[in-house]
Length: 316
Image 1 (cartoon, rainbow, N blue to C red):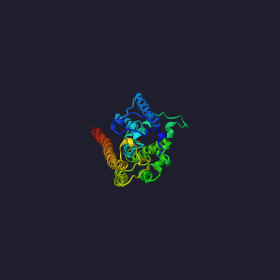
Image 2 (cartoon, rainbow, N blue to C red):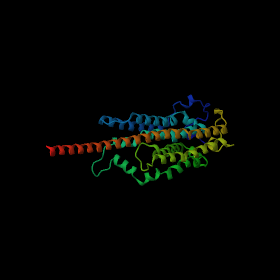
Image 3 (cartoon, one colour):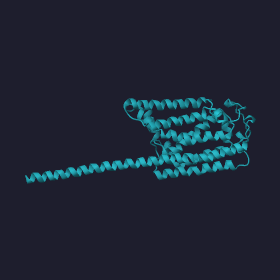
Image 4 (cartoon, rainbow, N blue to C red):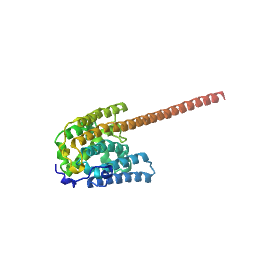
């Protein structure tokens, strides 16, 4: 497999964490991440100047989410990920299962809807176009569990166990497209489950938990299949450069272990986020009921006082 299109060095030294975290920017992801941070920052500043509040936790979550993508795609991890299955699997798992969760907890769509100005009557600006997209049939389809769960599973099996993966890894554009796909799949899978932003599908909390756990066993099985394999299964990683000093099969087994372990990590993160959201929702409902009860109580008290006043008048 020719990796010259990636500006890759075929004589990479053995992998260490220090070497992996050295700066090696992919221009596409560098520009995309900086643009994402700039737009989010603009939205927060615009709300603040208007006197509106935006939760600090959301900003932190979004920034960490973008930085996680930057870490995977703009360091030497990306170079090593081209020739080492284990490092590639770390990239895949972070970008498809950790980055999306952090980005969604940052509520970027809600921020955009609050920060973007409304267009004049009869005109369509960015805010109106975003609302149209949110309410479109297309969005209803791609966020429906009947679409997101099979897509989430197919992104593993149909990619790695067919020649498609080798084809995409053969060019810089293909590799970037694959990583964008991983991020997009993670976003549409986790958005209906634990996203803060409004979406077309928002089932009850029990259904959301079922959706979460529907996809995770397939992730674990995929990892086990790689760990148990007795020969390399992906052509791209069959002949790692001699300078790395690694065995292709051992590296593949390590990749399987990473995929298996990562099926647990996001599950716990999302479950905690869901339980917190559920608790907050119950609290809000309880407060609304209390306010309604107080209003009803006040009305009863007013009616009783009026009744006493009328008796008093009659007695007078």
